[in-house]
Length: 517
Ligand code: UN1
Image 1 (cartoon, rainbow, N blue to C red):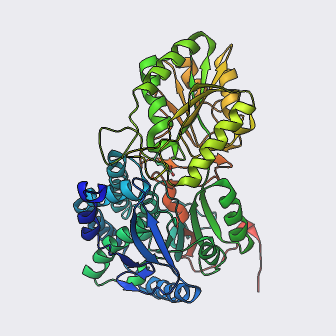
Image 2 (image 1 turned 180 degrees about the horizontal axis):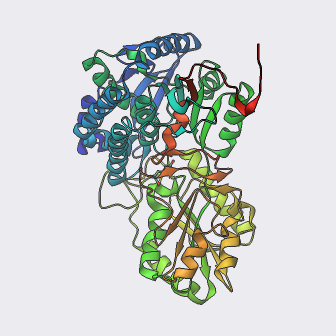
Image 3 (image 1 turned 60 degrees about the horizontal axis):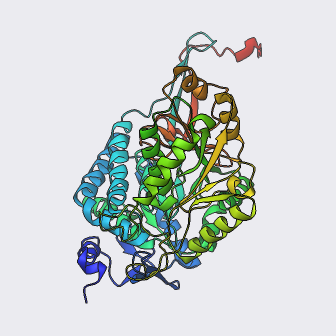
């Protein structure tokens, strides 16, 4: 029998990425310590077991930590551009492995193959960005108030950075953190989602080769696998100055409190409840493409997925009809088959949450426009495939206020001016991504102004998902306030030091204070 894994070259991809039937899930570079329980990784694509992973015990964790601390002692002293060269080589290896890694992402996580490749492309892009950055880790110089004094600031590496990533971007989000942290001179310990451990191992294997080829210590990049208890070891560990965590708001609140309790720094990328405002002047064709991709791309499991459409009453029916027609065209099925638009949800728990959300929407008074359904039969054996749904709702519904990681799009109507739509858009607890579809300059600029969107990302005539790595990525309010990836996000991975140098022969004090002996 030809399985999906053989038909789509998954077996070959796994072999290329160094993934065996049972993998050592704990590793610093090429060296592995793994004595914890076995974690099995099943594909949501066909429900098949892909491989087993040995998890990290508390004792293993301690060994990994020691290796990381030791590696930091030497790695921090390597000039930043040389660390950049290492990241450049990593980017090259990602180019060579793009196809294999993209396939694994698609098969283990369930996103479409194109999106799997796109994720690896984000990794390559952030490596390129980090290479340039390795020569630009600069601080400011200031004029001292004292004569013959010079004052400036410089950035030093922080130490061990803990990275906790989610299943939905099983490789890219780690790389946003790791590529920057590495050029900054930090070493990393990564705990990927338990739902996508093989993606973590594949990345680790690729980076390990680079470390080995450059005779660099293995502890520079460490991988640990396990459940939330392992996460707790990481977040409560005062040897880790920075924890970067991506996941739900519920998880982020626990991480933030634990890290703050020891006065560590945290960088949080949590839930979104992203909306597109559609004004009377919107280009309807562009709106439909942006909204459909935003709502059903990655089966609605991006933190940037479009969850709400806030449509002006004058174009409401037109947009609604166009959307319903577009949803009829959607092909749901094996994400490795490029004829399909929508792949499976990550697991059957996610399917249950999707069902519950739709039920709740109806109980609260929502009107179903495109019916949801769990698909069964040939090709849907994993039980993770669902029909993307559209519901007419109110922003005040409890379910609309929540982030459901599934392809459910809520249509909300607004009347009057764009200020009303902006108020609806901002009336949720989350603040990640937002967009406006309009050809009206006044509306667009108002949306981007201080009186406009309160989100970390605000787009004009683009959907809410698919941000480029060059910008700082993250959001406000319950999204956690962190910024990753481009712009000056690197600063969080370093400690800032202000230096004042007296090159004169007297010791004047600041603020004019006299202290004569
Ligand atoms: C996420 O869902 O956690 O903007 C990250 C986007 C992607 C990243 C999403 N570049 O949709």
